[in-house]
Image (tube, rainbow, N blue to C red; front, side, top):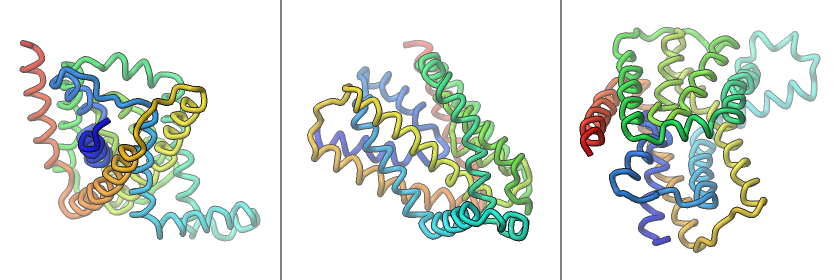
Length: 273
């Protein structure tokens, strides 16, 4: 794999993983447009997913440290549950994240491959981008509220995250919009949307690692993997920073125009191709 291609694909992974435009949908469309397979193999996927994972860990490093500290405090001293649970938001968040994993875990281990295979058609992906645009545009009409993350909200956002396994449906756009519709505070829903992504990315990476250990790894130049990792990490970090700032100040509806444009052009182009 050429270094330039690794660099560009790493950037593509980092940016589209966090911006609400569907990374999997863009991959399907790009493959069809270029008439080539852009899937670089399981080893490459692990590396770029690690890059995305590390970008979240670096960005939320202080928040994650606080959450883990409270989580292990509750695990080591169960008696604190009754006295601190109601007033310790960081302690509750860790359990809400675990709760949000259930839908994605069930779908991921049962239907993910079937969903991805069913939506390899660029026409279907283009249609799903129109759906993503509609989801994002609702942010323009929902007034900011002050609700917190609750077990119910966390589970519903987990369902939204599972639905985003369909190529063309944005994970970040769907989960954040769902949180807003549930009446959650913008700062809380934005942070929780990406905190709940951490175990999902970690789980996907673990599954890919198991595939490598089973003997399906490819011979890829180490330098290409290093370039892809840092391209994904750096681009992902700044994409995440940009998205959170934009959403907390203005919302996500601006990305709806992009999704609609790509979706409409995709439907026109691939329908007559």
